[in-house]
Length: 169
Image (cartoon, rainbow, N blue to C red; front, side):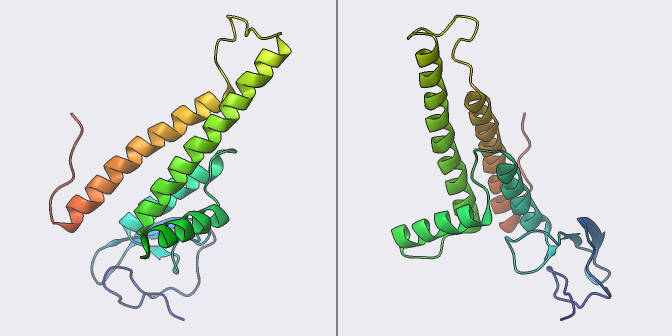
């Protein structure tokens, strides 16, 4: 099957799929195409900027050990949302659900780490350790990612309506 531009559906003159992520401009419409042969979120490796953004957020979630971002996690959240609402959820809704599930899993891990520290030190955590745990740092990372994702989604919706993206002051 010959690859197509994700914007104008023009056939691309590409003989083989690149082995790593790359990008180029469509000669027919001028759209910036990102090629990601290892992504599983979309049916084709030829992505629009919007699709590449979604892939990037899932990839970031997947790189943290205790965050949920695998294909199995994605499908599980998608199925739960489909059953809950009775319609196919949007990709942004599923990614947001993954982020929320990750926060819950990390909070549970953080509480377990604190319990282990209390058990180790006879009920009192030494002042120099405070309430620091590895999970607490990962929670902050996922919360920051959620803020970035919210801004990304806002810009995507604005672009669909033909408005320029908002800039942070």
